[in-house]
Image (cartoon, rainbow, N blue to C red; front, side, top):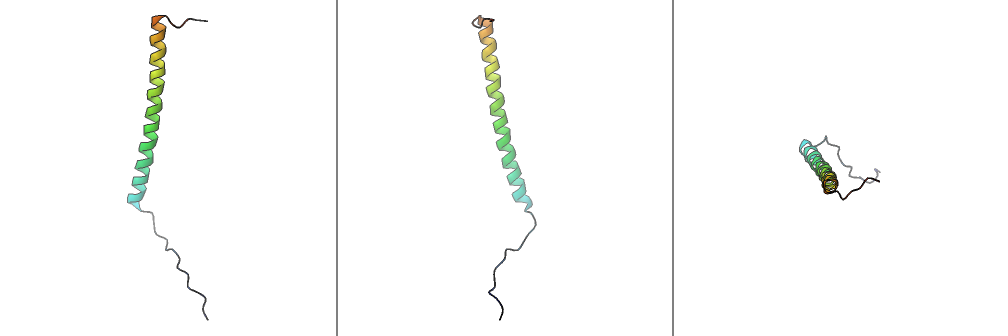
Length: 60
């Protein structure tokens, strides 16, 4: 008697289109987060120099 037949997943090679879409999505997400960080830092620097120019910031 043979044992019960179990359906095993057949291994296929990587899907090029799927890999490209995943890479593109991750790249755009990481790029968007980096851009948001850059804009935030730019805003902080601009605010600092605006306050410095107005004389609000005093050296301690």
